Image 1 (cartoon, helix red, strand yellow):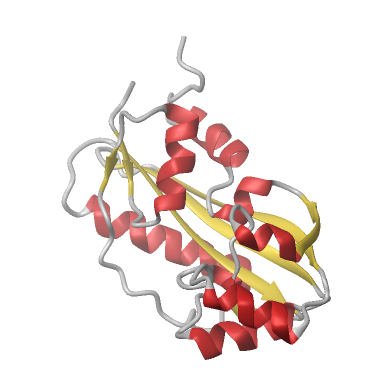
Image 2: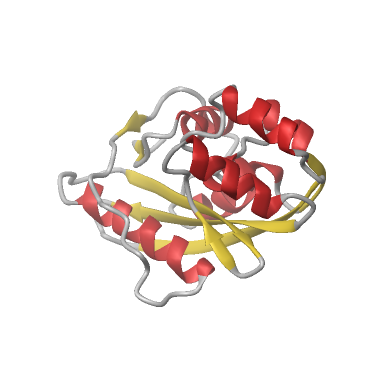
Length: 194
């Protein structure tokens, strides 16, 4: 198999990629600093960020298939990224309480040698239960919302906040595995390996 490089510091993305292709890949964290998006819509924004991360990592490589991603949560047309602190996490959780939100992940696959690249995005709708203040406080005190888009982790304790999901579950975690597997085929990387 071609050398695979994950351009992400996210332990969740690393676990998901390992689930898909096994442990034989490298992690090369991008130094790209995400900007505000210059007026881009949420889907365009996450694809822009994923492309910039891939380009940043590709600058130091001569070969390999780079995978990069960026995820946001959208609630009533507002993009929710990662919380700055516990108070910000509580505010986000109050916003998503009782709402249907959308997880949007932009993903880029790039061949470092040829510079061929593909970018796409995946959307997953999530219905959040009504969140009483005590539940929000207790959940934030676990520390789990830190570093999570929308201030919750569906694969962790945050599962108790979710009533229903429509779409790719793995997209909410941060790496849509079905979409990624289809994109990798365009780079002659087939899963599972024969």
